[in-house]
Image (cartoon, rainbow, N blue to C red; front, side):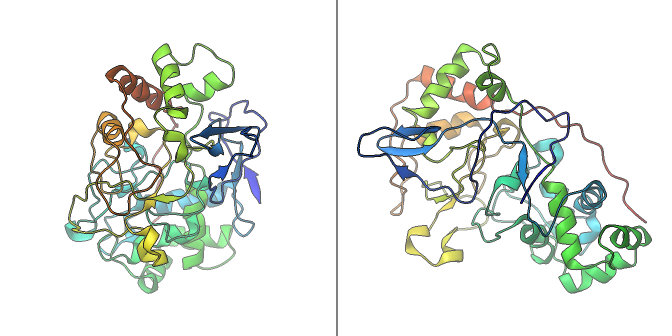
Length: 356
């Protein structure tokens, strides 16, 4: 089921598009070489074209969004009482001030525990069929409660966090009003997920340009878009309206941070092909969410472009989609200009009043 929940400040007159967001895999072009409508073909591989986000947000039938649930989820998202020391909230690592991501290379949890991965943005996670860098969660509801019992994140337990919140009168009242129940773990998950589905990046200069405003992007960004769709090969992974194929790839990213080895998707699937593979992130509002890659290895977009231009890193399981690009200095500048044009309209934001 989908539900239109884009707030007026974010809604734009989107093109009528039908988008499948459940794990799009590249499909081969027809024998004639002609690609289906709404696709781009690069080196014989046909992928969904980039474009504006649809106005309909994918929402499970079991967790319909409405205002009071979203407000409850927002309060929980910013409430450190979900953690063992009552100090680490979801927003601690997914900060609205830094693109709903973490400006640190890898995140810090309860007691100063250092995580092994960079916290990805919450922007447009409603469109992702998998959550976390390794895709171990199949829904936002599942993802929302995962960090609670992670020993290097919130370090709490599901069994303890429910009675802790149940002692708070404000949460007692809201859970009864929203769910008709006492405080429970499923309600916590559904409320946080409902709020996260309202965290959107859209109406960027790119969106305006493809919807007919020829002046929304400058000439450098326009050239960068052509590179993105062609020579730079970015669209092989960053395709569709959310600029991600929702798949997992090994790019040979240098492993930095506290982990000596990170096997990525392999830990979930135990498939050899998934060793060192990580989820393709959205590129929307990418300028706000540095550092980049699963371990925060690169601080700037220029570093990322240089990495891909060299053909990624050395790795026995390197994705066949990654190869040297031989971009010129001007082409690299143009490509970064296009990435900057994906910055969405600023969301109006206010901190919630936490219940007592």
